[in-house]
Length: 362
Image (tube, rainbow, N blue to C red; front, side):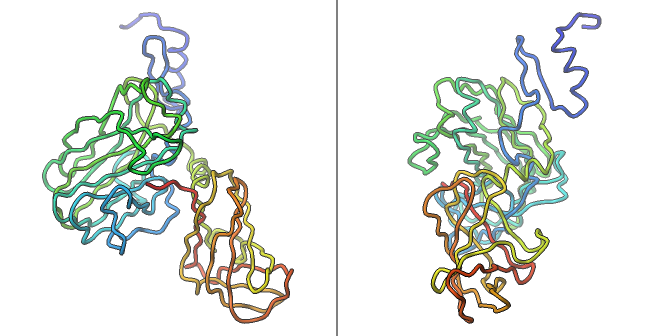
């Protein structure tokens, strides 16, 4: 009402809110969505460290336990249906939906049978503890070109054991009941006022956006601005500096490429017998690196005192979980190195990549 006095808090946020501090809402004296560090890392789909994922690989993601990451950090996907005959899980870097300019994209997706696409986020308990005893709301922006309207359902699960996301260890807290999303229509799908007072988010949460696609051929689904927040209603997406988002993403996975460094030799190792052991210090503290993925070994080399070896394989050699560094062994053939020598692990060209993976899996 015009001329009606407002609280000092409301007046303050009325004044600074439009200047990029983030959306807000005052509900019965409680402020929501103000200055929060976004609970969901990379909810705007800005960071995409991984390679695009061919969904027709030998292990097709046709069950919860087979869910896979695509190019975009922190988002997995799996499907219901009899087969995935085409499709790539990639990133739109000039996305036409949302306001971040980025989206996770199921591109040219073909599903046979009664298809359903399940987007997932596996959220660690230490990051979700802020929601213990709270009411939360979850929103996501979604667009598809399947033709007819499709039902999108948002779900929140809790884990029964700390940070254990296997199918037998999650319990559904609540489901949105479904919202119809028309063809080629950017839609803000909301799941509001979810009571977590009987759950324990401190053990971890699984967040799901389920799209009832049906059998489809060469169709596209895009998502962005996935947000979980305290409060009875969804508020607009809070933008975070992309450099901050990228730093937060490296706690979960870190992609090393030649073009990201001033030189092609990115780490040093000590020769141990016929192999070299590389030690890489993480720029951010991580839970632990449990696996490494890498490109064809032909993109790597090993060198010492001007001599070179041909890399034949890499394997993780952590003696135990470490939040600050990762060790991996490099096996190679060719020149003989002296035990105890420092060696260079080299990226020979910009097609080589090495992913240190600390993500959780289903």
